[in-house]
Amino acid sequence: MCALCGVLRNEHWADQGAGRRARVIRTARLERVLGRFGLGVREWAGQYVLTDGKGRTEVAADLAALWAAAERLAGRPLDPLDPVLLDAP
Amino acid sequence: MKTPVALVTGYLGSGKTTLIRAMLESPALGDTAVIVNELGEIGIDHAILRQVDERTVLLASGCVCCTLRGDLADELRDLVDRRASGEIPPFTRVVVETTGVADPAPILATLVSEPLVRNQYVLESVISTVDAQHGLRGEESERQVAAADVLVVTKADLADPAGVERTVAELNPVASVVRAVQGDVDPALLLGERRSAAPPAYVHDHAHEQDVTAVSLVLDGPVDWLGFGVWLTMLLHARGREILRVKGLLDVGGDGPLLVDAVQHVVHPPVHLDAWPDDDRRSRLVLIGRNLDPERLERSVRSFAA
Image (cartoon, rainbow over all chains, first blue to last red; front, side):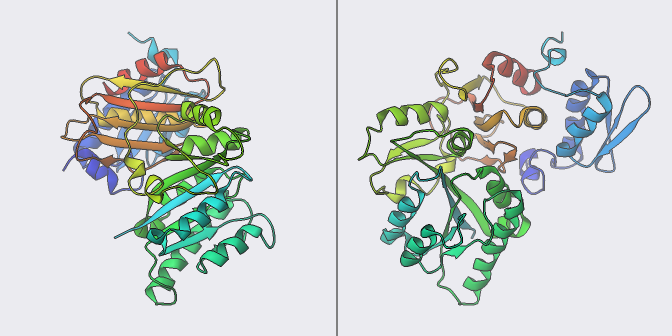
């Protein structure tokens, strides 16, 4: 069973992988992106826990909720076309 | 087996009802239930359709927007109940007509995300009508065209349709374009596996001519699906108002590609296709929207998913 087939059975198209391994990999991808905006992320109880440098925390149930929560912590829009990401070495 | 749903959208007076009436006269579509939605108390649309098919259901509310999604879901569930009880003939397809000013995204969201609806129905095709006399009619019209799998240029007997056909094909290169006079179109061109049609690997940049444009991105080698999911959710969150459509075939390492299709913020469940449509096995993605910079988009998606 591929990661995608796991995705298809669940509520959010991109969020539910085929088990633990997919979630770990996805969280690693998120770490790399969110780190550029000064945020950390880890998986906890099937959810995403976001933290900022001041120790503030937000919990997001899925990827749909994650970006809004991350923007609240970062205090700015998070855009994949942001120079912070595009011009990163 | 899920019942296919075809959505017919298009601006006011662009020929939706005429098209549906002509579709229903086809013997191949004799077992079709129709849900219409209209703004007036006693809409002429309803009367016309009722003459053709008594299973037409008139939604109680006005414009199809978020508040009406429940109504549409109720009607779709009710059709299933009535079919199961033998109250109505065993229809095998549903056609939903939107209002002329409707944004199709909330209707698609209902089909994709409402649990009981998605258990019983599957979106078959989004058909958008554009009349050859007036062409695109503002933002609603652009959204309807961008969401389409099939673009029907109507009233081809009243005006030369070539210019409008070219305009809508440029705006939405992932849709097929057909021409209609009095709604007369082969149903096979409108229904069936329209959503599985492959997006083109190349589209001409018309940014200098139109507000809404289409761009294509091509990626060599397998795509990291998990990274792609992170990228697309982030992109649609950040730019959901600007991006009207995303459709692509992705090489995720299997025999066939993965079909990804999103209308604004509504992402259809990705589908594994058995085979690539042609010899070109590169991942390709077409985006339709405003302020799209293909060079930056390509760099961005590569950084997440290549």
